Amino acid sequence: MPVPATMNLLRFARDTYRHRRTVETLLNNHQTFTRHREATLWGCMSQQKTDELVRLVEQARQHEGPIIEIGTLFGITAQAIASAKRPEQSLITVDNYSWNPFCMPAADHREFTRRALDYCVRHAGVEIFDGTSEEFFAGYAGAPPALVFLDGSHRYEHVSAELRHARRLGARILCGDDYCPGPFPGLVRAISEEIGPEIRVTHDVWSWTAPSP
Image 1 (cartoon, helix red, strand yellow):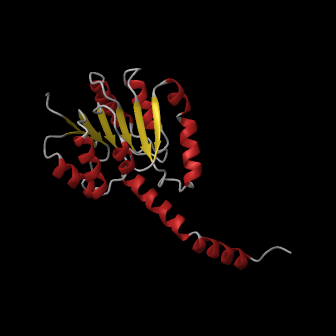
Image 2 (cartoon, rainbow, N blue to C red):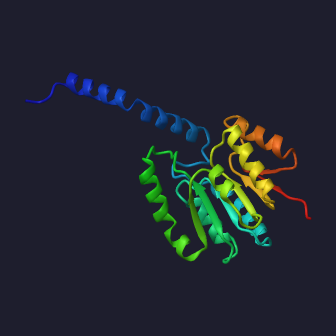
Image 3 (cartoon, rainbow, N blue to C red):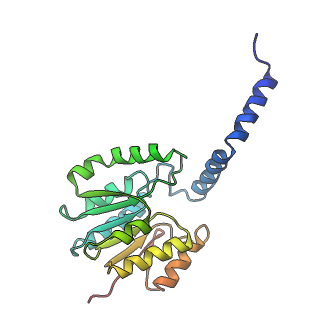
């Protein structure tokens, strides 16, 4: 005997309520990406943004230190960075897999990203750091970074801390995505306080270059 339509509706309502936090997150992500059409659900930047980041990475070739990316997500931007840096220059990409636009479990997100970056890890000098940016910077003991790209948390306190760490380490170029006062006021405020007005913004990609020593 077919299940009455009312029973299907009740089951749907019960399941929706049970997974309400996931549904809310998906709706919020949809609204964010709808407002910012240059971003996509695949976790990559627009071509214009990528071109600007590649320009900065090519500029960073002249410096000896590594490139550091905060916010790996699915590794798409890391691949663009890896293709533009010097072959022998290392790229360290940092993520703790606490967020992704598809609400994937952290273990699945981690495995997907590891596989996406497998070739870069084996052949292009890419290292994956599994942890928070705070954990990474606390344990970093390498050379002053040639470039630090921030595209992880956009919360004020996190961006402020990452900028302070990067400057403490002597990073030559600081940059990041989503310089948008409307949706990300905390990020813009942190950059204003830690760096000041001496930044360049191109297609929402912001950058700052340290003065020559």
